[in-house]
Amino acid sequence: MKNISRHAALEPFFPGNSYDTPDDKRRLLLDRVFMNTRWYFVGGHVGEIIRTRSIALKGLYDKKVWAESSYRIFKLIEDIGGRFHVRGLDNLRSCRAPLVIISNHMSTLETFVFPCIIAPFLEVTFVVKDNLVRHPLFGPIMRSRDPIVVKRENSREDFQTVMARGKELLAGGTSIIIFPQSTRSAEFIPEEFNSLGIKLAKAAGVQVMPVAVKTDFWGNGRYLKDLGVINRSKPIHIVFGQPFSIQGTGKDEHKQVIDFIISHLREWGGLVKG
Picture 1 (spheres, rainbow, N blue to C red):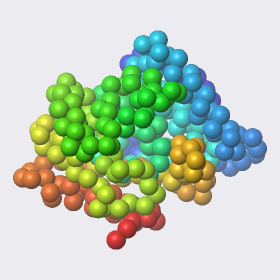
Picture 2: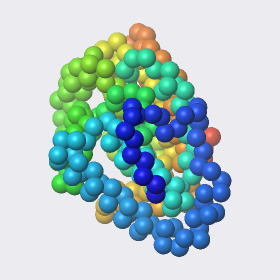
Picture 3: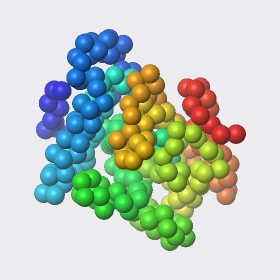
Picture 4: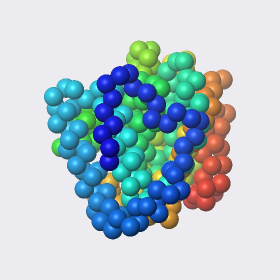
């Protein structure tokens, strides 16, 4: 992969409203046997984490380094046959204020590629489980992004943490990415999609952006969840919706986010319960 280091201000990696992996990329790479294996991907993925971990430990892991590292993972996925279809980038480009970004969570793929798509347009961080910031390998990287950390043990305590820290970050100009599902899943279950993102946006007086993803190209592993199987027959879909404000209790807006995700998953042949 080419060197993508940038010394100027961070520019979007995807300048249009949409991006599709070129049709000829997969055909060209099928002849490169080793590069078309899962283990090439695992090696490149882990190698990138090790490289950026050392940068984070030196206190140099800023938004630019984060986005560029994410883009390397994005291109690595394409190198092994992943086909991206990204839509709604103009909705990110038009943002003039921080907001809450609410997405379904299908695999670890979106965690790694969201930064190169979103960070050129917004200051942004995640709501994450505490095991991510404590992880011996990935922890220093995640901590450097100043995420909102929840424990998933006490829902009331987690709610208070997200509301307090979320409002503080949003007031300071940082957008928040929330995955309301309790865990990554290839099947979307509306009943398990909580309204925490809507509640935070309402309390902070900011807009919400719905995001729908289908990222089961990168499966969840049986023993190591982040190192699941790769399925090249499954295209990768990511759509960023138009931001909207919260009115009233937020119940209608929560349904609007769920309907946005369901409609796209059904269009892509994804699994939706109910």
